[in-house]
Image 1 (spheres, rainbow over the protein chains, first blue to last red):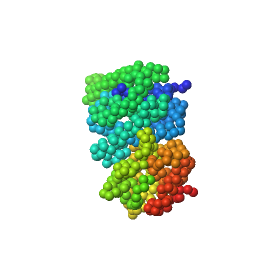
Image 2 (cartoon, rainbow over the protein chains, first blue to last red; image 1 turned 60 degrees about the vertical axis):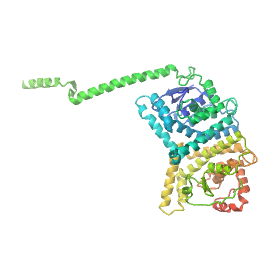
Image 3 (cartoon, rainbow over the protein chains, first blue to last red; image 1 turned 30 degrees about the vertical axis):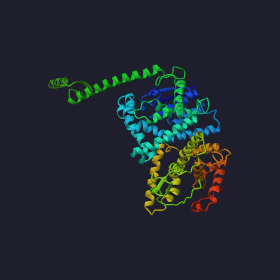
Amino acid sequence: MAAPMELFCWAGGWGLPSVDPDCLAVLTYARFTGAPLKVHRVTSPWRSPSGHLPALRTRDEGIISKPQQIITHLRKQKYNADYDLSATQSADTLAFVSLLEEKLLPVLIHTFWVDAKNYVEHTRKWYAETIPFPLNFFLPNAMHKRHLERLQLIWGDDYMEDEEKLEKELYREARECLTLLSQRLGSQKFFFGDSPASLDALVFSRLAPLLKAKLPNGKLQQHLKSLQNLCNYCTSILSLYFPWDGGEPLTGVPRAAGTDGSEAEEDPHKRRKQLLSVLVGLVAMLGYAFLSGIVSIQRGSVGPAGRQPVTLEEEEEEEEE
Amino acid sequence: MCNLPVRVICRANAEYMSPSGKVPFIHVGNQVVSELGPIVQFVKAKGHSLSDGLDEVQKAEMKAYMELVNNMLLTAELYLQWCDDVTVEEITHPRYGSPYPWPLNRILSYQKQWEVRRKMKAIGWAGKTLEQVLEDVDQCCHALSQRLGTQPYFFNKHPTELDALVFGHLFTILTTQLITDELSEKVKNYSNLTAFCRRIEQQYFEGHDKDSSAIAARSSKRPLLR
């Protein structure tokens, strides 16, 4: 078999294997189907081959970045969690995915990235601590702006300006969506019986961050916590498929990014930082030396300026002679 | 479907009259309510509802399928109208700008096009090709067809909001003349969906006089069946 596929995703936190819903969805789906993936938990999108997370480096189709496309690719490689679903169940999957994406996901983005208290005290703090220097100064803010713009386009300026209206209508619809999911799940283990499907991966990836993160302003979170079957659903998936705490990967065969890997990733990081700072210092000193005339280069020979007049004098003496 | 008396009025500035900027909206007494969701809520508050007989799980499914239609069919319609260059030039610009004199017609339609394209970019549809969009429409119709099966309505004997929504979109797709027939062909592949549209059209639209203005507006389009 050729080299396994590599998945790049955001690092874990808050008790989850990854903090980003899209990355979590792809990871969970891969776990459900047992797809052999080499997972790289990175702390910034610049370390991903495509610049975005999640990203899948495949054997022959280059790099895929959209979560839905990644799942489709896995399906094509015969890692299909929806194989046993009937036609009606597949239709239901499409419908519930649309419900999630339209009603729940935008409000989730708002809760994490736009709501002032949550963003400043929780989301920005986590990302600023995790992303390496110097990206941590501007990347969280850039992500915040991007999400804000996206919500503005989806919801229109009406809602963005009127906090109360937003709170009342959109959060109400999100709470309704959660309740509907809870009713559909009922007392089943997964949405379609006893084995998980792609819908389970998506629902889990949207609900788990909401459940686990310690949000200061958590009205939606409280509503989710009141739906006992959804909470049990999330915790059971976490304990079944991600038995180690968030951030610590498996030591099994298909998972090559072991703890050593993550530590090794940190070490060259530190070394790199040290090297960089020494280099910067050296360049600064040399630059100053050249600019102020202490050191200069003449016709290929390098030496301190002090020797220069001596060489010239010697030459003059020779000429004189 | 609720048997409520309604008068349909067509106005060029309907989008501006609406409180949320979106059509359709209803004007009842001194209240104005826009978009399907709020209108359904409003009508329900007044005591008319089509989905009271459904149990909780069915209500969940109904809401989910309505979102599916909104997510896929509506977005595909918008894409085809505003992001496909050929259609935009030949059909959408003239149609959208028709009530206004030049140059207002061009300015307004370009403005709307820019707005729609920005939204498409935000939801990730800007990178899709026409084939991918048609593929999505096909998937959506397949799901709807599966759910409908051989029943007369989506939730067996009585129509609900979902039936109204699906009818609205499918009827528009089937009867609007575009450059190519690809979109309506996708829907026609599913015979139970076309039968569904025909049935609703016959039952609720053809026998009613008060809807004559609506029928007159539609007479400029092709008939449902060829």
